[in-house]
Image 1 (cartoon, rainbow, N blue to C red):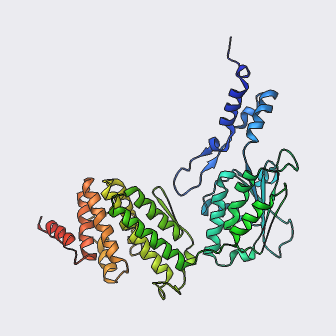
Image 2 (cartoon, one colour):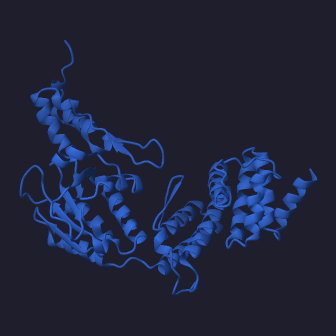
Image 3 (tube, rainbow, N blue to C red):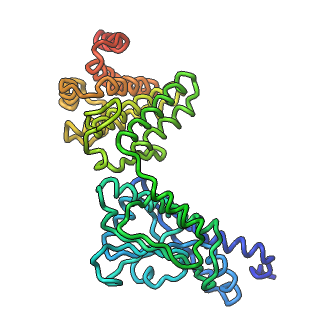
Length: 403
């Protein structure tokens, strides 16, 4: 006798439905670090028969979806590409989609009410990424939110007028604490709890840290990382360095660094120990110092691959500001044109040149440990130009010249 799915206990069938139809299991990792994840729901189970359709639909309805509607067609691409927010569906399917717990209506004063609109649907797990993207955009384009209106509508898509539990209201609403200083903002529907709404308004009222505060906080975290590094607590050191990057709006995710809110730092610092200095200049110096320290941490951990990766990545990026070379190759002949950028940048008095020299030398150490001898030699020669008074580096260069 053949196997019959409906002979399985109801709790086992329910578990299978959730495995097939949940957002977490429908999520497809991105093909590369620059693209967002995506979703693919296998809804064929709903077409099996009436009983399976009835049971599986309940599992699908346990997902928490959010619908976002704006009058700007380019918003969808911006949210997906700039914010790397996974989008489940857009277009006509999103317009007709009603199985959402939260609806965002974003527009601007002066636009006709409910004119041409473009919608998209996202999962609850991706809402924080969406609000962070919006937060960074407002920092990058000063005053953006002053020209925008946001209306949030809560609803239970399955039982009209049923109150949404406080825990879910918190998950749905509090991420918008990052979205501040809007022209107009409102929350309505599904018996919004005053305590949750008040917590949201309190978060929105907290001003963003100034560039001065961001750089000072990042410096404190960097120094804490240095102390952990000196104490041999390498994991904690890396955590502090990652937090330091986050304090200046740079997100570290694995081997990727995402730089946000450049426009926020395009001004002079008006207080603190760096008063009078350009904040973007101070941020750049801090970034170079952090990379140098991260490479040193990996060297101490004997993780040559990570040390070399972080170093090469920064060297190639730095080189690209002086040359049109797009290759990651660092093994060319030292006397070749591809290394002229080292002499050029060093002669310009690059502000973080000492730390750049450390990056070059420490990367050379990792490359040598991994057997990339020519690359290591080139990097040591480059480091010697940046660190003319470092006896260890100069001694290594002398040894290379004598070979």
